[in-house]
Image 1 (cartoon, chains in turn purple, green):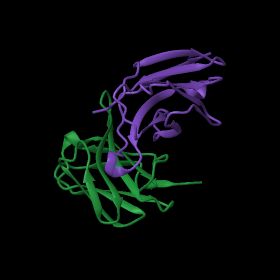
Image 2 (cartoon, one colour):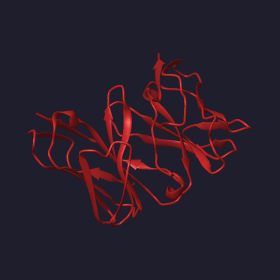
Image 3 (cartoon, rainbow over the protein chains, first blue to last red):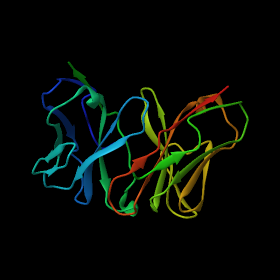
Length: 113
Length: 112
């Protein structure tokens, strides 16, 4: 079973920041938070991951709460091409610690003009 | 650019046929995965492999088997295809240690 909870859908205006929340209240100390997205008819695409510190790359920022029970993915200036299903996943570092990549239902983000 | 290549984008097979879905990665990754994706059910893990000749069942292995004879290739086998195996199949690979996984474009399999 997926260990994360995400809203099923969200809307965002083009050019505005998109903030996608994720709850992972049962996360354990060796588990990372990953974000992927899937644009229609394509394979999922990696966005970002983190353990406990906030992370930023060219695509997005990841904010993890101090207790690590929730996180927020931020797309700073959403474009129409960011319309996709966004998946939040918790994953252990090594395969023998449960390091499989298990997807939940995700959040369908619609960026509107 | 890293690449995960699935042998077919679209495939139509008959009920009872043996079906092979092939996946090749060019990144020397240890881990490889097979998922299926269905509307309303999301991506579900069928099998994964963390080394050559090693495999582990995912959440829905029934009706499937896998083969990993070489590090770069991971095959999904439907021993006797059934209509409920009509789905989008996605292959992925990742290094052994914690990092991103790369996905192929998917194979849309229809069993008639």
